[in-house]
Image (cartoon, rainbow, N blue to C red; front, side, top):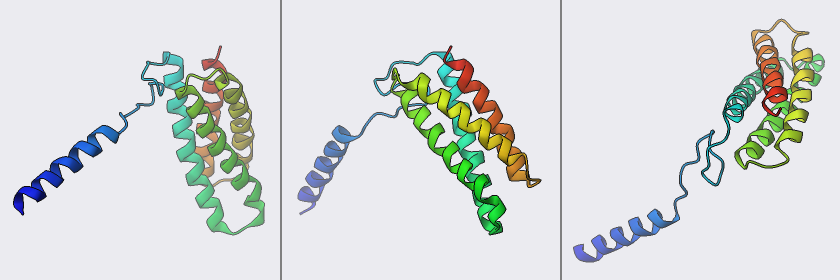
Length: 141
């Protein structure tokens, strides 16, 4: 009985060892090749923008005020475009540049909208979105 349990445990361990994907760090593409240093900075800024936009979206949603609707929508768009940009940069895709330029435009609009409000989450989001916008514009040149 103990031997059977031990064999099952070993078999289970071996099966999971062969199916686990290697960890892909933000500065590596899915193929494991290291991306250029410009991608590293842009990916880092996009991740920061996703966090700041999510915090802003949550804070604005709690207010239940229709004047915050555009801010919430642009935060969602910022999260979506930053996420897509990261994915394409990690894939080392030829489409990464186009997506990053779109991301830059969305982040600029999000920053402009967030600047209209005095909440600390909106101010932080505006600041981070501007930094991400610049990073996305210039990392692809």
